[in-house]
Image (tube, rainbow, N blue to C red; front, top):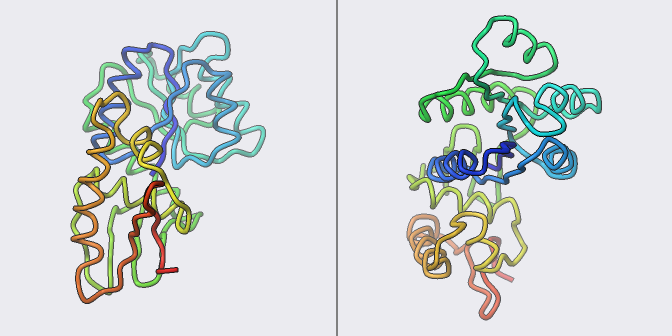
Length: 223
């Protein structure tokens, strides 16, 4: 599932983004409230991780503005402020949860999953194609009635393909979304797609993951 991280500290943004990627999330990063606001209103995110202290438009204004425009994406606010009044202020303007710095990364991931479970009550989340289903909240993947166990990266590749089912995604598109900054992106994509095929397209099931030679990969029934 894809989340938006709004954090002006570039070093902190790299660390949090890397950790979220490793936990199986797709991550877009904005370094200012204005940039994050534009991204949050033009793209579909499962959740937003938002720093309170931002240049220009701060986290409080960010939350208030999104909610005023009817954007209901769950927001987890990060801040060094520990006071009760600060927590109440953040929640009152529309944040769904609040995590104080410094924090354990495992807690950030757990709180994100909790937000997504709660938001699942009001929106459909299960992706399906034929006898393959993927639940972005529980991370459960089922093919032909059997649960499929995937690594976080395999899961992320599959989710991206399923969200664009029928479309051809190039290796560079997959790589930029999942392995930013790695020098061997194409090989990583090929290896993980190969592993996915062994689990998702096991015989005698019809293959759903297809190679489009010279272009990339497509998930869907045979054409």
